[in-house]
Image (cartoon, rainbow, N blue to C red; front, side, top):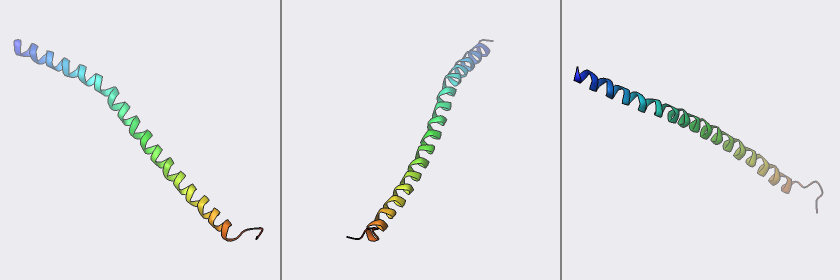
Amino acid sequence: MQSQNKFTSEFHQLDDINKKLLPLHDLAESADDIARSSRAEVDILKKQIEVIEEAANTAKKNPIYPQ
């Protein structure tokens, strides 16, 4: 009986710990999602910068109003 009570007590302690960890796990997953999304945004911005730089270089080589 005493070992049963000890087991039950330890089980409840582990259950309490698990309940505390679940929100942290959800938070970590949210942080991963945000990081993934941010990296995707950075990649998009880098591509936009490349296009703008190419356009600027083309404009320098082919000015509308030659000097």
